[in-house]
Amino acid sequence: MHRPNFCAVCGERLLSQRRLSWLGGGLCPKCAQASRRAVWSVWLLFGAALLGGGYMVGRWSAAEPPPLIIERASSQAVADAPSARAVQPVENERVYICGARTKKGTPCQRRVRSLERCWQHRGRPAMLPPEKLIMQ
Figure 1: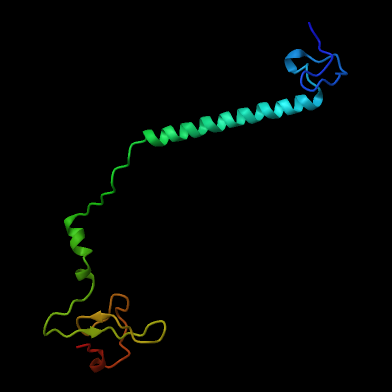
Figure 2: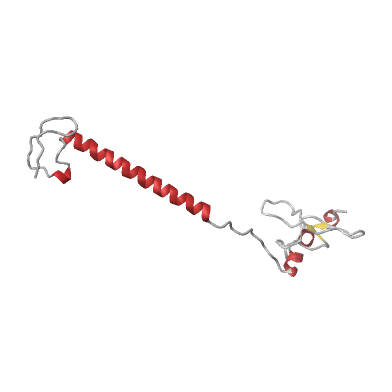
């Protein structure tokens, strides 16, 4: 088998005669390292291109997701309506405030329909007299 005496790239004399030809036996150590770097960079670029191409094909071939549709039962729609939550004053109906002591120490300002407390202060006494609890 042929063993080269000089580097195939730069022409420098090769000192070791024990190099195998299939492992880059015709190159000096400097040229062999540069050749390995070039081969690795080509493989890395090829792998990145392959990965990027696969990503793009996957994005283009993916089906568009269906639109988001939220359905509610008819009883739930009525219960969640803003008019059902807030106290809507009716003509000739008095609207009061809760008036119970809050953690801050001030009277609660939530509207209620009669001289009762709001849902959060049920069972607590009012801080204000009944005359001052009337809103209308």
